[in-house]
Length: 390
Ligand code: SF4
Image (cartoon, protein in one colour):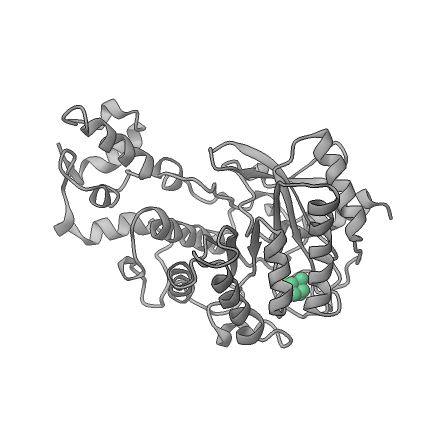
């Protein structure tokens, strides 16, 4: 097989790893084929625009047995692998033809975690040293990697991720007999956090992780308590949630192309009117509610203790968690448009960071009597009206 044929398989197999912010507001744009027959992934970038990433596995061979993964060792799937030199050189050719945001490099486990890391970091090293590539390289840290292998990846990458998968060993042990939650996942996650802390050698490296949702019997409360701890104690930058789907891995399954992808930078304008589109999607609605709760942590000043769960420990599938909080806290409202703090305004349903920024900016030069003049969409103004005073 030539590189393009291998990449066609390996880049398609990389689609289930969401921990690289791939995706745009348009779910149909999750991935698309380039003219060179390679799968390329749209990415929402910091200024809100989109770019293209080459996202691939080094190999879809895997010695592990994760029950939620279509690449596990017992699956009958065509196994291929790339050589670091051929992947680096293919990427640079592609980069010269069209501007790419960068590369996301992951892999199944080829023999051992460190042997796999060697192939990932060898590719990054060729890009950095032979081609003097200074752009974005995201390296997946393979569970069970040694600290030396992690150090090498951190020295070459712009971003790294190691998927936590489940909120605790009890849930993980139902999904894999080979991987050990504490030693293979939690210890490396802590080491990554340590090496990328503010005053540490790799402080600038972006770090992310991902939960698989619904493959075990974990609750949203379990997932979000770990999410909160990973933000607060380990200073991770982003957590992703991937709804487990039976038949995972088969792109011909109806709706598989319509996975829910949320943009990295989001406001109430896009977050709260948005609902999952798949018909069979209670698990996808669950994934969506987890993303909403995650945004409340990262952009709305909510803490884990602010979240409201149903008796079984899950978020209510029928209402977004911010609206539910507002409904249950009538004593907090109404808040004054002209006097309320940023934190108070962010609690108002319909108002997100962008709208609140506009209110605060307008307040510097005039008395804000209405939301109508601030270019906030009408349906969000209506949502906010009962929670504010003018
Ligand atoms: S180690 Fe990764 S690629 Fe291998 S079976 Fe588990 S999730 Fe899949």
